[in-house]
Length: 320
Image (cartoon, rainbow, N blue to C red; front, side):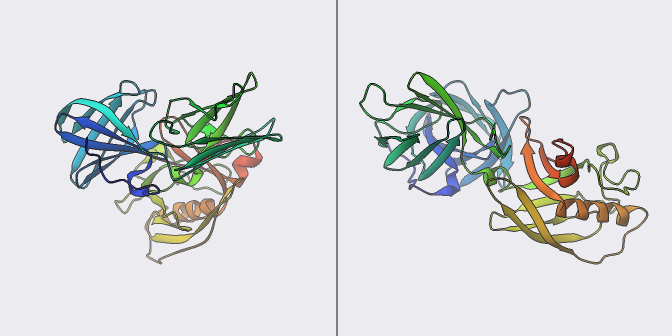
């Protein structure tokens, strides 16, 4: 069987890349944030979870059209590319991630994995297992770290996880069975939940007063009277940009283990009509008040403002 030439650390295919054979066609599926990236030949499609699909159905598009994938189980998937159903898609190969990290609390534990070894540390105990074609840290498949009877067993699920101390979201839920106990934690890069797409703002700013009526209300979409969507994009290199109600803007952002912050936001100076300028000012001020973020199971992003966080609310700027 000939597989696509994926190298460890090739992020263009996403995380936990898997190859499927669909008759005479080869398809690669990798995870990006809470979505998946489907690659067939030179065609690439970025797919989002379908609401109500319990994390098993993804749909979206790319420069050459649309695609959909439904995972029946860990071995079989139903894949549709540009309206054509690919027959008999069966998993043929998994590639280990070049780097994967997960942590948990009470007690604190750490899991680190690369293309060669997976380590698990808890208290003063350390276990290691070799990553190979025989034993690979893949999604939904338990991996035992070592031959010892008490060796931990690790399972990674592509399911939203929030750190129990900081609340920071991550794209993977990690379960480790060790010493008769189940330890649950979060894994993967939280930044991957933000990157790789242009978010369309759908409304909702909490605590930004004074706020003109309708300035950020989901009932008033489209938000801009200038005829375009209000958008936000994170480039993965510390730059944030997008289109406000009237002007385009840019700034910087920083993501730590505990918070997301946005600053140095500047915009062009195009004049607005009606209440659009007020709405834009509310929106740009809200961006600079962001202290965190959250992603709902249906894929909706919330950029949590300082005022909302102080009230214990997962609220702020909403986007899809």
